[in-house]
Length: 415
Image 1 (cartoon, rainbow, N blue to C red):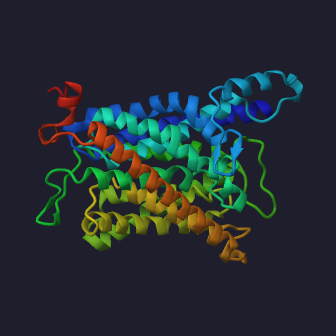
Image 2 (image 1 turned 90 degrees about the vertical axis):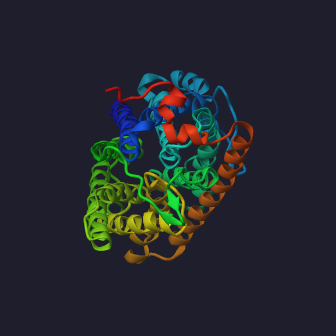
Image 3 (image 1 turned 135 degrees about the vertical axis):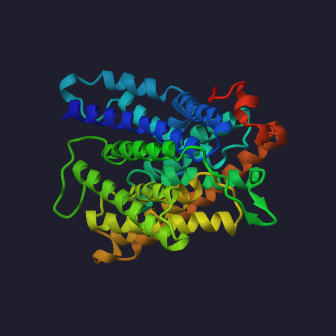
């Protein structure tokens, strides 16, 4: 099973990597053509920067020797040291994941947390400044929260449950997106006389294709987080790779349906972009508890997220007046937190709906609030320092004429 475990996790990691293409297409499709190349470049930056800085810094801060339950010990040689120790184990005695398999699966998650931000900050962010943002997210901010939850930190010791990252990955990206939109301000023309103006994306087909790719990638994101294929379903607990496929897919399906009907009721038409975000909302929400909820529970979680994402996008846009072109704050921040809390209700072993006590729900709430607060504070410091030193936002001229021409010297559409 040692070989099968590593093979499965590497395949899952490749699926999660493919999600970068999905994010890129969603962000390009939901924004204007004059900024398509810039968005594509930022998605490449997230993975490239994540690969380099998570290798040298982020991985050890997340999985290194625990320091007071807060952070891992910084060790630039942690991966090479683990490889050396692993190579000294006789072949017949090896088990689990190789250090390289473990690292590669973790780095694609780090890149995902970073790439969530690019959509919320689209069409007005200085490209050089964004590179620095990506560095800090993958090297520092995400690893700190990740250590608390998955690296042996205080939240894991508390009993907080986030199987594949509704909070550890998605809420971190979502709350950082919230801060980024506040510091950046809205796009020119987004709010006129205090009223929100629609700035339509240039190709909804790209957005739809991107969501399909993300849906496929999630079958690596969630089932891959079992960290092996030699996992069986216990009598009292849903913990098998195949069951996670089912719960993940179920939440995505009901997320779409709920968002479609909510938008239909609210806007008198079944809105395409809202329905697409409903899929993502369902996927994000079920990610925390996909291993411990039943398929029926996953459907309910997805449906709740599908309703909430429509209401949240509308509230953030029209009431808070925060300009998030792709709905990243709602999909990843709000629905990530929501799904994490719902584990306290739908966990088939400890959830309130299954005879459990409120302890699990309390632990979930503590984790959600702690990660949200810490991410907001660290992100605000990061964005403000970057803004003061190298300007986070492009000039008015660049924003009006398009980032592709000014930031990259060419348009991606050359008819």
